[in-house]
Length: 246
Picture 1 (cartoon, rainbow, N blue to C red):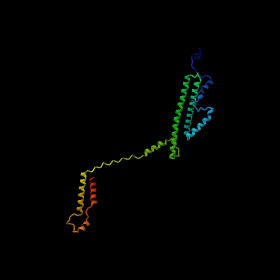
Picture 2: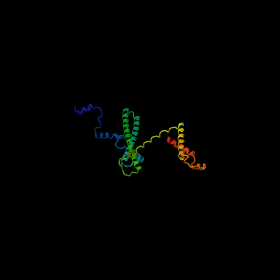
Picture 3: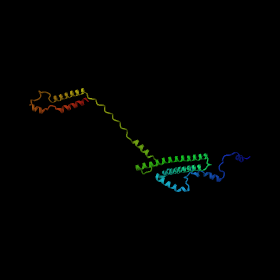
C-alpha cells in the first residue's frame, strides 16, 4: 500500500480545502461575518450608514493633523467592529432558535469568536481614545500659551511643571513665635510704684538741687518758674519704669 493510500485510510479528521476554489473560499471565511477583516467590513446596503457615522464621529472628535486623524480613524473602526459584533450575535441567536440542527458546540464556538473580536475592539478603542485625548490636550495647552511654532511631540505640560519647579523660590523660614508675656502680679506693681517714686524724686532733685543755691523768690513766681510734677509726669515715669522692668 502506498503512502497516499495509507494516509487516506488512517486519517479520519478534516484535512482542509484541497482545490484552489476551496482554498479561496476558506480564505474568505473571515469576511462572512466581518469580525476579523483587515479593513472595515461594509455590506452594500450599509455604505450610506457607514459614511454618515464616519462624518458624525469626525465632527465630534475634531481631529487636526495627521496623528490625530490616525487615532480618530482607529476609534471609528473599533466602533464599527463593535457594531458588527452586535449584529452577528443577534443573527447567531436567531439562527440557533430557528435551526434545530444548530448544536450547542457550534453556538459556543461562534460566541467565543464574537467575544474575542469584541474584546480586541474595546482594547483598540480605549487606547486610541487615550492617545487622541493626550494629543488634543497638548494642542490646547499650546494654544492657550500662544505658541505658534511646532514643538513636535514635546509634552508641554511636563515642561511647564519642570520650569516651575526649577525657578520656584526657596520656602521662607517661619519666624519664631514671641515668648509668652509674664503676668504682672501685685508685687510687680509695688516695685514699679517704688521705681516711679525714685525716678520722681531724682527728677525733683535735679531741678532743685539745694535750697541754699536757689535765690529767694515769691511763692507765686517760684511756682511759675518750677511747676510741680503733675499726673502726666507721674504716669510717664511709671511707664518708663515698667519698660525698664520688662
